[in-house]
Image 1 (cartoon, protein in one colour):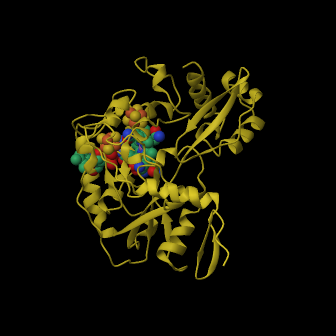
Image 2 (cartoon, rainbow, N blue to C red):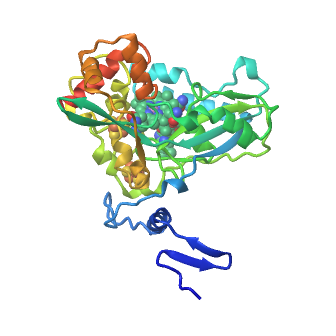
Image 3 (spheres, rainbow, N blue to C red):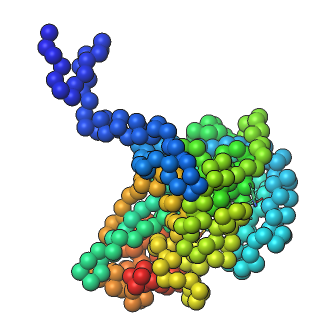
Length: 354
Ligand code: B12
Ligand code: SF4
Ligand code: SF4
């Protein structure tokens, strides 16, 4: 009988090739299941940062709640916002004023809400500047993600599993983190984000109302992710010190994202070195041990040419440039209109002078 060649195994169903990809996946899988000792406060117990096999990360996870839970969540959300813990900054109040747990007037027959967490990786983009490349991060949420675009269809076909139930996307009008925490889909953490088992915090949340009755209620008490009780890495990594080492929630007034998502000059107190992404900020996620592995799963967008980079930095937009950038940057918010373009110009410019 012929001996199996190196790199091949035999079983009852005949020879099976273990290719380089499978060997790599096996090695990565072993790394995933290695226990992550997390000893001293705020430090990695082990020497190695966790690696994750991207093919093992679920595309999405979901939970459902009956809409009879809406009044409780509405009262809870309104009470928190009326308290003194949260900023009165106009940008924050404008955003949160749009959010509630109220049924839309044209869908009072909704029975359940489906809350979905979709794993969403960060992207990088290369700008060509002065003969070299500047590699810039585009965090989840600032580019059009394929799974996000298909989410309503996924909910209809894979979660509700019938074509007759009505599904309405209420992601833009619902307080998503509280919904995710109350449904048991995820937990709040010190950095004020929601973490979901198997995807860390590298996720986007979505909510859909449906007239389908799931007949279950996964109502969950609010709790903080256990690891946060003996860790403060996000607090130490936040460039503007918005995260408390001792309490919750964050000081939103200081959050880089509050300023770089919108037009206008950055506050004088914000150091140039605080900026680390084309929009938003990634520090409280990429420093978190619970996000270890997920933060390394990323992709790359199409390069921005030297000429396009120059045009952006000069702040002069035209229809052709906007169209090209919308395609290359996958609908990045600063490419959506001539009015939004100065946000892209400002955000890139502060990174080039860092
Ligand atoms: C307004 C907003 C912002 C504001 C304010 C952020 C904030 N922390 O509220 C700004 C512009 C700063 C922002 C920044 C970011 N955002 Co934002 N943002 C939103 C938005 C529109 C509303 C959030 C909201 O309701 N805030 C109001 C407060 C009151 O809500 P809350 O934090 O849930 O408050 C609860 C807790 O604080 C809790 N609480 C208070 N004290 C305590 C104490 C304990 C012990 C416990 C357990 C709970 C608790 O009670 C409150 C409710 O009852 C949502 C989208 C949506 N539709 O919900 C996205 C959303 C929250 N953002 C998101 C993201 C990704 C970000 C950024 C990471 C983007 C980036 N890369 O920069 C940063 C992260 C900043 C941070 N560390 O929080 C994701 C979060 C995904 C996740 N994993 O959780 C969301 C859900 C968007 C989405 N579609 O997925 N964001
Ligand atoms: S770094 Fe992660 S685990 Fe540590 S306190 Fe912050 S959110 Fe919690
Ligand atoms: S997004 Fe950046 S600035 Fe805002 S809390 Fe997180 S680390 Fe701090």
